[in-house]
Length: 126
View (tube, one colour):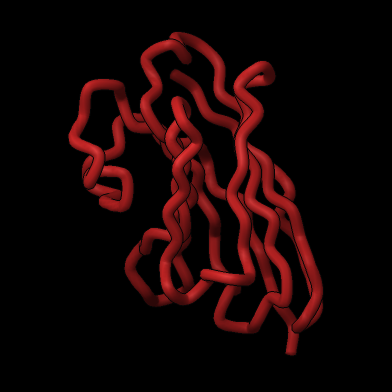
């Protein structure tokens, strides 16, 4: 599975941005997809994930209520709508996919994901 992330850029505090991630290849193997981010000097962290069957979603506490993850299975695409962004949201955002038949609690664990896209940089100005 190949993943392509896009949509990063500059945004002011309180503004909005929408990230996209398109999957190609053996997408029938995908169980869930997620967004992760890595800020300068910090480790990569979980942001949000979504199950491709059923559509259950999971969020980090730091983004809950501000970010919304969604998917369009027909387009093999996943989105992250970022609202009311803060300077702490500045990071490189990565999309990733988890193979099928994995435990459901793996969807928030970046070390469990099987495929990764390149990052897209989001910069929030104060």
